[in-house]
Length: 98
Image (cartoon, rainbow, N blue to C red; front, side, top):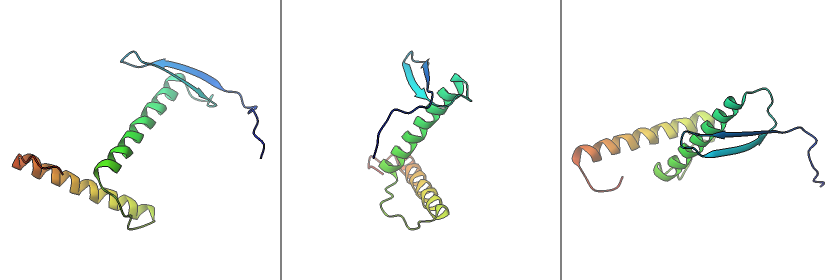
């Protein structure tokens, strides 16, 4: 197996968010503006945080289907169950965890 330096041209992008944090990235995308690439990475991070939240809160320890529709259905039902549990907790002012 040979590892070498890519001959593809790369593009350096730097942007500052609303909290004055600087982000730098390299990309091979030349068909998008700097703002579009920044929004893509921002949205990607939000998606990563969403999946982290799902893993921490929904307890999907066993997947009942390997088909995409089955997985989406299981996630949807787990979200509904979490929401209902949260509503009951808030209505009863319970201190117990979900």
